[in-house]
Image (cartoon, rainbow, N blue to C red; front, side, top):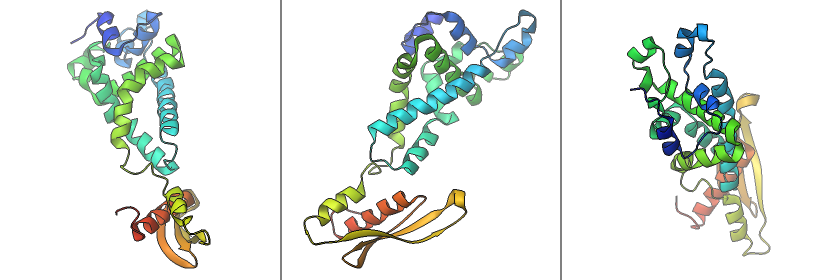
Length: 234
């Protein structure tokens, strides 16, 4: 059911707009705008476009500094899992965004108020509206309490460990030991290569790794060596 009381939304999202026209635009679905063309009503599609970029940069920024040892591939995987439609739909429901979206009559009758795509898009539009109205910090203050639990839920246990550093520290206990990483092969097209790397200690292979990047493969090789030496468990 539609709720026009924006004070209820302010409470759930912990942000009060200085210029409500940004909020009104963010909550206006294209179906409503199409039914009100004579009034020259605009919809939230442009805000959604902008919000998608804001969401990506804020999530990337948080993960980059929070997990300094997380490889690029894991960062990309986690971000993709977090900014997907399902997650945004869940966050939109948390702040009861569905109650405040302006929908056309047909969309309303067809259950659009609880449709994943509509709510996910509205969440991105809402984020953009907060950013425009209050700036980057306001957008982050609104987004992070909602999205950080989702990020941490998708972080693979142990994926932020820098296995190469741990192995190097282990090897340094023997000053004369020589540790090196050797690429033993690569396959696949240029845009989607897979690399194979051996971790070699004093001429002997102590770990093997495979990854979408040389760095990821080296991390996996180092992890294999640490398992071999009993430093970590498999």
